[in-house]
Amino acid sequence: MISFKFKNNFTFKISDTSGGFTIPEMLVALMVFSLVAGGGANILFTGISAQRYSLASQELLDQSSFMAEYISRALRQAQKDITPICLSAGGLNYEITRSGRGVKFVNKNGQCQEFYSPAAGTRIWEKIGSDPEYPISSDNLTVNTLLFAAMGQSQSDDQQPRVTVFIDMEGEGGKPESRPRVHLQTSVSQRAFDVVR
Image (tube, rainbow, N blue to C red; front, side, top):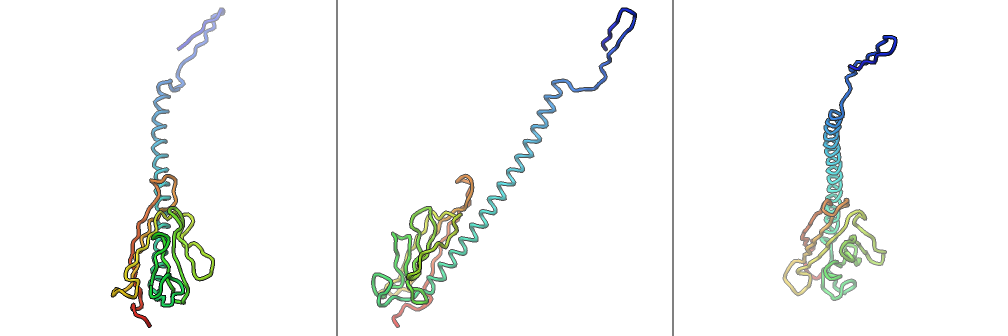
């Protein structure tokens, strides 16, 4: 309590009953608030990044599943190139191109068809006959590796022709370590028997 006394015996008293905070109390309250707000923001940001990763993973799985099925279906329906009109030698079913990054064959409609990736970190492309080439993978996915291996593709062997496809793709994301990634490998056997008609 503070009191002031004036000349004519008038006394003025100030009482400290306001109940305000002291500076140490304010600092402690501010620190507790900062910890609670920081923890809440951290949980929120973690949830948002987990949702982004989940959505990118789902898109990656959808796209890679579609591409594997699309390529497999086309390879399964390939025909033997007897004349040759498409491949480098007659009697072949498949021909590996672009240092293993592509495969060429005669499709079910008798047209020359090729799946390939020009280089690592690009998209998967398709070329059919004399039509312009076009991508079959999305532009927001990165194809790190696309490799083809063929077995039994010539007429002189006793094996049913088959192609093994390996795809390594990653989805979009901020940091490279936070991008979803998928490795796909499948082997496809030609549906028709390997005989000259």
